[in-house]
Length: 190
Image (cartoon, rainbow, N blue to C red):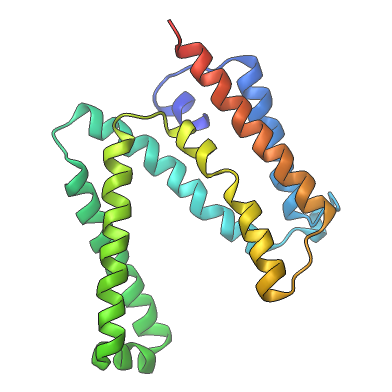
C-alpha cells in the first residue's frame, strides 16, 4: 500500500491506512517478543522483515513493468534466478570456501542443486505470469496462513513453544491482510 501510494500515485482510503498501521504495530509487538519494549526488539527479526520489505517493493515494480513494457515473465524469471545464483555463490564462496569447493565437485550436490534450481525457476515463472493478472495484495492474503503451519512444524520437529503473543500477533496480521484484501476488491468492483 505504501509503495503504490508513493510511487504509483494510487490513493488509499482511511480504513486501508488504519489497517496498514495496525499491521505495522502488530509486527512491532511481535518483534519485541510481546513486551512492547524497544530493548526486547531483535535485530534478527528486523533482518527477517527486510526480505518481505524488499519483495513488496520489487513486486509492485515488476507488476507495473510486466503490464506496461514488452518484458516477459520468462525474462524476469531468468534474470532473478541468475542474480540469486550469483549472489548466493559469492556469499558461500567468501564465508565457506571449503563447502563451496566441495559443492562444485560433488555429483550428488550438483544433482540436487539442479533439481532445486528447476523447482525455483518453475515457482518464479508461475508467479510472474500470475502477477500480470492478479492483485499483489490478493497473493499476500493467500500466503498469510502459512506462518501458522511454520509454528506447528516448529513445535513438532524442533520442540519450540508457541507463545500466546505470537498467536495473537498472527491473528491480528491475518485479519489486517484479509481486511486490506476485502477493501481492495471492494474498491475495484464496478
